[in-house]
Image (cartoon, rainbow, N blue to C red; front, side, top):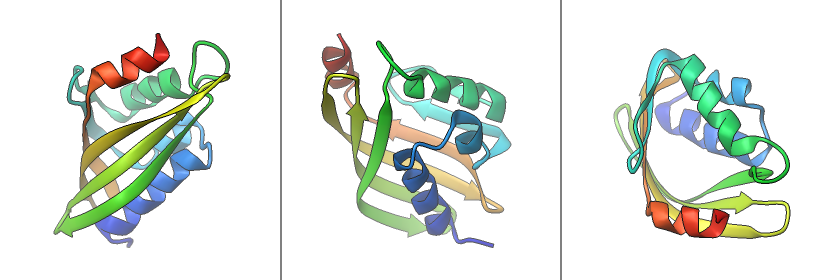
Amino acid sequence: MESPIEVVRRFCFAWSEGMEADALAAFFTDDAVYHNIPLAPVRGREAIANNFVTFIRPGPPGVEGLDLRIVNIAVDGPVVLTERVDVFKLPDKSFEIPVMGAFEVTDGKISAWRDYFDLSQVTSQLG
């Protein structure tokens, strides 16, 4: 079985490779929680997949691609911390957002993912 840090590295890389929402959601346990801290948490693999669709739908106003670039990564048992620069690719521009992420991995699957970032940086770029 992959180590927690390997699971998280592969998951972040999958975003950059343009993996579809259902395939990304397959990294999660059935009862996982995904929480962009400025927003409400999303519970369950199916709800997480639906949430991902809002980030990767093609064409305006959607994001055409999202690269999760890991700057630093650390692990303590099942918890993996990532310092990242997330690069959002829109039809007419790209922008970068600094993000700190905390992942909890259980039996080779992500059981929790929390991202900490400044929501106003995202909304100002999408507006």
